[in-house]
Length: 189
Ligand code: 5GP
Image 1 (tube, rainbow, N blue to C red):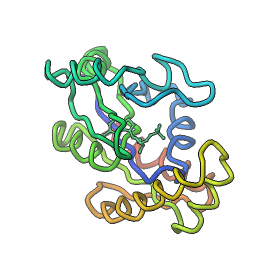
Image 2: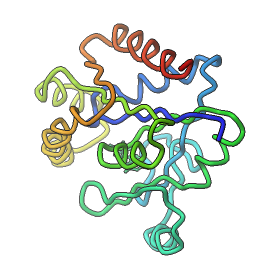
Image 3: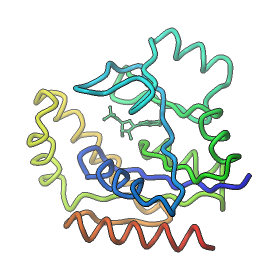
């Protein structure tokens, strides 16, 4: 396999997606985004095949049965999220580096699968309180859902030491620069 994997995991609202999008703009990194499959409904302007492959519960279970997933998780009680092997392998074979934006357990599973071919990066929010402010500010979810995510965030933060690199996203520009440096170093190795 020619390409490498860069895995980004973090509690939601930590700015992970913004950092990944910033890195995707650097064409010299030859990054392709790993589009996950999910059984949750699209939010806002999300489109099938862009942010996610949106599948029904039955379709998702069918892929599980066939062993099509590199990893999958049931997140937030009910919704499935998973990485399709074919998605990743095609890009690696074509010589692209694949960027993953997935939850902490999925991230560690992908790292275990690819070993030295993968770099796992944990994006850490400055505090749970700051995370609460960001999720409320984003305005895409009800308070119930936000509280659920925060409870999950507390648990996810405990996984940080298992990642190859931890980047604290206090100031976005600083975190982006640090992420760019860490990834560039890994890709030239
Ligand atoms: P959201 O619903 O906000 O898009 O994502 C919810 C959570 O699912 C996030 O923590 C996200 O990183 C995670 N997630 C997205 N894709 C995958 C995947 O393929 N596998 C796993 N295990 N988690 C994922």
